[in-house]
Image 1: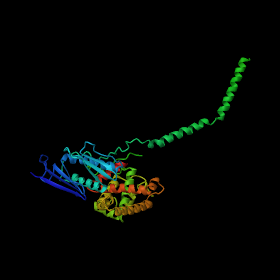
Image 2 (image 1 turned 180 degrees about the vertical axis):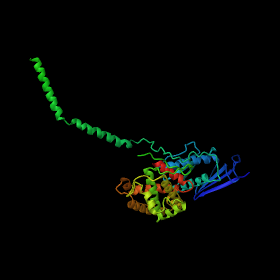
Image 3 (image 1 turned 120 degrees about the horizontal axis):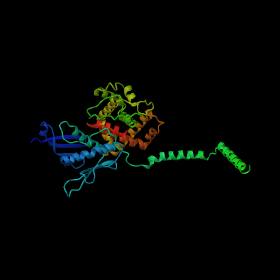
Image 4 (image 1 turned 45 degrees about the vertical axis):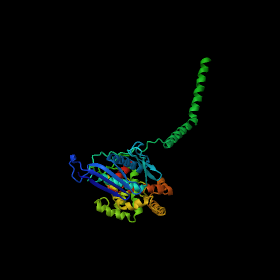
Length: 205
Length: 188
């Protein structure tokens, strides 16, 4: 069997992918269509190994994280059950990797910005490699031109200018009610006077 | 305000180039600030970018520094801001130019971002970068604008500059252009 090994380097990160061509999809001998295993080495941290599902999870977690992070939203991706979880940590980024085997504690890796960029670029090289043609949908990597919904958080401070504006309009309008209209006042007095005169005429003909 | 059409990412095959406006105000600001950062890091950054544009075959867009400057003056924060919006072709060329330049500057960007470098050296680098970036902002941007004044405050400059350096670093590499395009679409 043809076992192909491709290595992608970017400064402190090195990704090694082993796989086979998928002849059912008419791939040549140099192409990887089925990933059998992968190894990720980040300088200063233990080597990570896994199956293709773990690599997919890693990709699904890292790309949205980067997208949100760059847009100014620092949030974590991957829940407590997920095999990979990434979250902002102080000035860096914490990646938690959980093994599928029992009795193995989760591995925590804290990367600085430079190491994260290295890792992302390394993964980019793997995804963009024309020799690798996986039948993965890459939903999270699909950079569609749709604006992220970043303003989910309700912030009262956002409404303060509108509320103050509305109050000032009401207050300003209310001030006009207090100003006496002299014409109306005189007309009212005259009307009242005429009315009383008519009434007195009616009572004393 | 007319509706703005999102810039298509380079991996989409059906790219149609038109003269319609395609980018939001904040996106324009960010692209201009990224170019300003490139100039901060590299003396004669504009000259190098023009050479890069010739090698990329986009010299029709930016055949000289005046053409590049004219596109950049769409940034509303500039002293001499230009009305109107740049075309999709201009924006795509700018993104391509930034991404290719980021590839070349990657080692320097990495040094700035790394926490593993000796602290005093990194600190000195950031101080130099901060100072030069502030000088360029004072020179080119409209200082009467509140957002520009805010940028010139020490803490704001540093955090903003760090964000820009990270974005520029992530704009490099095989998928960097896609990432930058997405970010420009996201923030508008």
